[in-house]
Length: 92
Image (cartoon, rainbow, N blue to C red):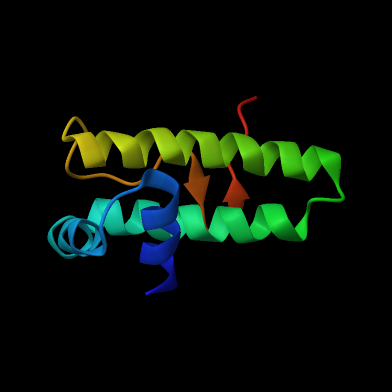
């Protein structure tokens, strides 16, 4: 599970904790998948400052949400407001 490895590295948590949360909370699993996707996109778009800035913002929001899960202060259900499969959401 490469996504778990990414989360483990970034948040300094053990694999068992990440796997338990992924298995018991679909919203956490979705956040982790979105985080991995956003990190890959940032790497891909690092030479386009506008897109890179958008993805850095998305990553920061996802990190806050993942951290909330890891500390036990996150809501249990619901999709991430920061990211969708179509890329970063922009406020207008």
